[in-house]
Length: 345
Image (cartoon, rainbow, N blue to C red; front, side):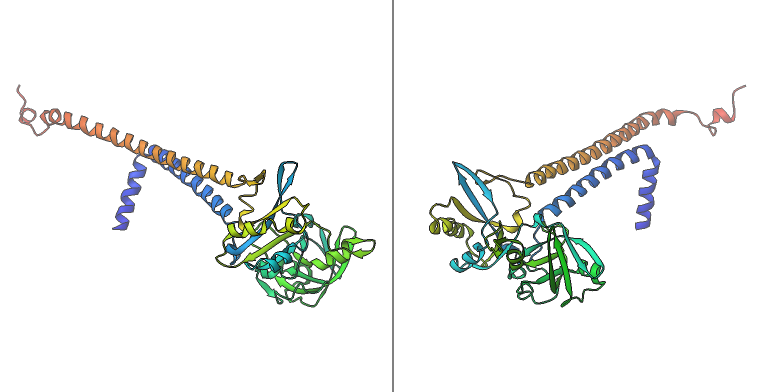
């Protein structure tokens, strides 16, 4: 049965090659374009949603009022995370990092092997807040030591040709700073749709003691720092924002900053703020391309139906002409007619 249907379809297609090619080409091009747009949109809306605690993961933001103009920033003090964790019961974990964009030019060496890598400095609870898969090491301990370094499996293979590297010594260099560290863990690389891509993590204590120094003394106030928190499941974020908004001004009356929590997974699509209010971002492109994809698909379907209808109408017209001429055709003499068999002489 299927073979017969396939034969019938094939004969129908080759019977009018020009029409079949034109119709199928238009429909298939529209479908291909719509599918490609859908895949791009699907990838965009899933950026930074790979953590199992995504619904509880937030970034601390701040609205800074300067002479009536409000600007939104993600830069804060190094102790903000700990302060929130101690004072807000709904916040169960916090992590502090240096801005990832600052550290794309590390040089990491082991013996004669030196590779370029990107990384950042992070507080002790980083792997508790961001549950990357650890191939080696204890997530609550890997960043406890000041001289600790946690590397990706990709970086470990480049340096050692294996991922079994815990306890080995690495030398990292960033501009004029160079420090010897010990590998305490290996993590699996973040997926390609993650905003923060890095090859190594260093202890935040190393930042303050080895890089930020005032008159030769470690300075933990040097920043700015990004702060991330994990809230209790089911926590009311609107109420929580109302609680943490005046937290800094209560301790420092002259401060002009109001804190709020932003879902970590929204930083990619909703990253624009105007006068302290969220004002879109890449979500505008997602919406635009969604409309374009739908428009292309509708046009392709309409074009396919119009061509099919036109061909059907043409065939129907031909059938009507044949039906009209068939009586005349039947009245014509044939070779078997007596007038042809015995012609009059």
